[in-house]
Image (cartoon, rainbow over all chains, first blue to last red; front, top):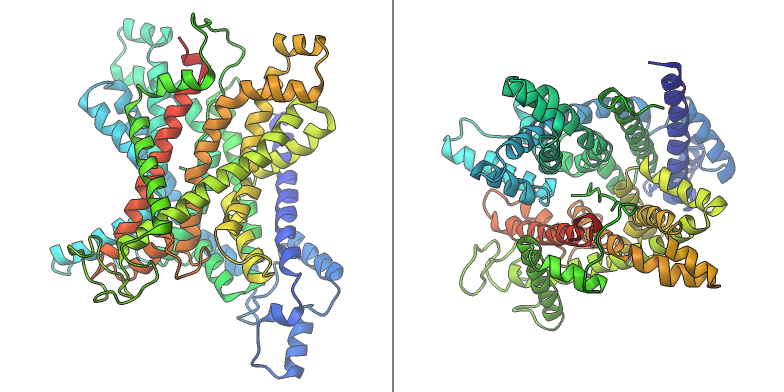
Length: 314
Length: 307
């Protein structure tokens, strides 16, 4: 960690904060174009209590003042209160849900990188053999199959057929809280990108194992494990690292639909249910979280990058 | 998938001029003809387009007609893909869905190009403050989850503000508003490299105006990568539409969107899996075909591969 790196990270953090507020401001301002009572979306309460509710959520203030209040809240980490479930503070709710989403996302990324690297390296080392053909065709097909399609096949196999085959003793039940409920969503989320990582790894590995320094490593009689792991793979990884940023964005986006299919109480499920319930405060809040998360994930990747490739400095 | 990172062709490297002069498209065709996967993709795409056109005039049953037979009926001879939870013919609905898919995909590719190409050309050619402004948007875009922004745009424009009814148009618009940066970034990079080349200098020396240089000298030379990028925008848009409709935020219900059909079907996965499988397989094959064609085009247009 040089001083340059620290100041670079600082600058990026400021930029992320600005981007987050800017992007969610657009959502805030667009949503607040509708009048306050429509915003509250509640027809059952009496006029007096409706007025009290509107006042409670500051919906009676001019837009500029509402916006100032909201920005001040965001800066202090306060995203306000749910419109549907009165009294529920949004920030702690979303932090709890983020930890659920992050668990699934973590395993998904492990699957993506693990499966992708192994398939890619094996395919490259066994180029033009049946191993390569199987691995390559799997990845050529796999990266076009969206996560929710895999999820539907997974549910059908693990939830339905497994129930029949095992006579109802061992099968998948959608939901969250048990460790056996993690693998299926993580696979559905991670595998499409694993196919992509495999393609990329194979291509860059093929290039690397033909370089002079790898030939030297072979020539001086090193074990194949050492040549592959320590010499070739390290450099072959560099192009793979460049796609980590888009990969994490993709996994965050994909988690929205995966969490809804598998009934996982994460950020993605909250996002869609708040949209369908028209709980606009939560919609804005989730969106703020997403913008910040994607920004931070990209920053993390950019910080890892120079560790793998020392030629890159900030 | 969505993270198709198109390698930038290395324009600086010199390559052998072909002995016989062939046009860009002719040359690309010569290459792509030898790429079996790309040809299969192109074949599937032709089938998709024909299906889409046919479905606007004729489907075995009307796409919305309910109770043409028992609900949840598995595939039979009369209904090769079976019937759904409302007793609608799934084959007819898959055909109708092809039309929506083509509209979303092609519409998005065109609008993304219409936004992205001029802005990229301007940023790369004039540099200075024009570039600063456009690059600001491109850089901001890298820090946001673009599909989720597009999702929320569709919701706000259609359901909150009621500006545009939910449908193909608003989906294409929202997708394009969050994706033009991708094309603009590519075109800007190409333009920055091309504007320093000798033929541009020669054109300027002979008194050509900026517009002519951009339109006649820079744009045609950047065309290959632009076509590749536009091709990859199609599966991304198709996936976005399916994603929205699956979540119930896309094209509203009676319309036969593949995503909405999958969403209908997955509730009955235990006893009628054919309802979800038909649209999901159609969607996967479509995405695959466009990705294969895109990969083939990328290899075909890559100057480094030229003999």
